[in-house]
Length: 280
Image (cartoon, rainbow, N blue to C red):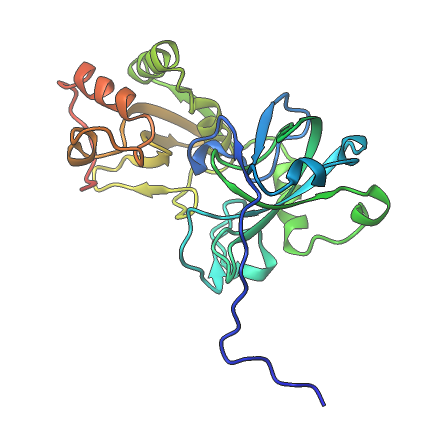
């Protein structure tokens, strides 16, 4: 006889380390790691757990699996809106959505080197500070199935492999603002924004695109807001603004606000600029 499971079973997991990357917000992170990207990210293993011994023999593998925790999510939904493709909701277990019953993610990354408790890996889709629960070697003979059907993703991939349908341009003001952010603060979200807008600038909750009462469209880009218009197949970015309100920006140092100093400086520099937004 099989014993029934407990009414409320609980499992205990602890991180074995944390990854350090240049991606501070979800917007910075690609939906999947970009193949061929030259990155160096560091997994810092936790001292005192004998993990330096645990990684013995791992150096012989080209790639590893990271099992990690979606630490910025606290809820889940049975139906989700994937960022790729049209505004069509899918069952969460048929997606890679972070809003899962158990917020666990998996990512295959290139293994570059191991230096005691620091594991250097290549391109990834993890934001800075993501807890790592486990590491496993990637074994091509058992982990790769290149001919397997991808379900609804096959249709999305076909669309993504075609040429972008929109041409993205930037006004002189937006160009000035973005150039200032790059030179003064090393903040550059324009390439990622252009990539998304060139594919589909329509209203989409997961891509954080909505239409304002002014007629402008607004897209959330991590700590920033980007405003644009659409005319035929041309998307014109008119301007950007900081994404956080004064009550959070001006109330001392706040570690939960990314690019806080850059946003304060931006606000001061463009204080006379009328923000065309009905966002409260």
